[in-house]
Image (cartoon, rainbow, N blue to C red; front, side, top):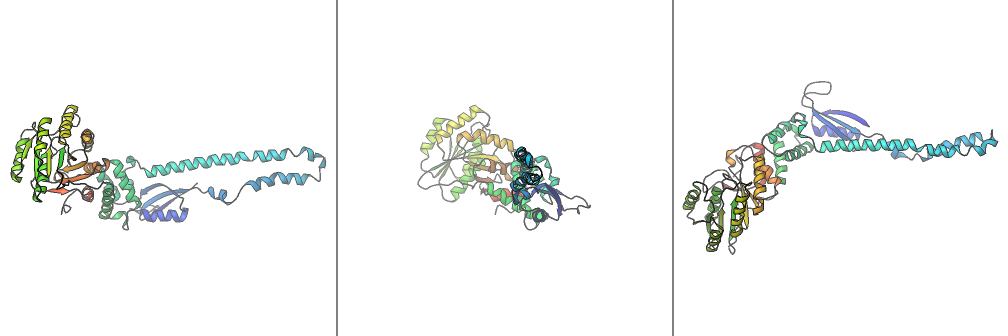
Length: 404
């Protein structure tokens, strides 16, 4: 096995040197940034350690069988004239010589298999770098970017995918342009987020949309924002509230309804929900604003499930505040999943600069987004969710300039 080190100004240049010197079958064993002037290079350069199996070439050129065949023949022809009487006793050594040849070949095959296994193990380690590898090992500006993704709550599996993508394709400017690297990373992340599906209404068929989620997520404000958007376009909308426990809950939605000149119904039982849904057949859209429910409270979840079964929504949006931690978001999706969640709606994006948890949920859940909100103002600040918007906000820690 041939192992060599190469130093270059960028990772692409180093990989070119490896391929040119060792060939396309070379395996990269390690990469690091040269952090000080030395015999290996100057500060900021990339050092790549690569290897190639140089024992495979002789095996490819020819067979060993002609060599084995000649060894037993030579002793027989040389000794035949001088000791003819002993020729009858000499045939046995020839097969023994032929039989004795395989062990070295078998041992070599075992060594080659072991070497192949070691190379495959190294390849696997490179394909999935461990989080403990550290950001200091990443070249140029990629290290700080990877640290930011980790600090902002993006799941490690997703951040590793982005880092590996940027390592392989850093762009023409290499690892020295932070803005270019972030742009490529945001585009890669956006590709992994499902295509959004906002609420749609059909003039011939009434739509029923339910908003569910934990307490404090911003469901009531989001419902009012959606209602405002459709009424401004000439749609007929009604609001239904099931929130009778939260102090000020009904007053809040009634205040919003007053601003929008909409009717508000209260449905705190299954029978009442049945009556409301039957009565509001003259509207285009019924928005059901449910009360805050703990995703780990089985009794509350059962009550919510019964109400929604009676309402018969054709869309169920899980409302999550962008300020919520990743594990809490995961728990919410798991808890509310059984009621038929088919959209994600992120609120309060104006209250944080870290969008890792929201981006992780958008990727992991495989549930399309519908809307995002960035204020409590009604009407206004309701935006169609766009993967590129959310992923760019993650890398730049800001929504500024993205909501035009």
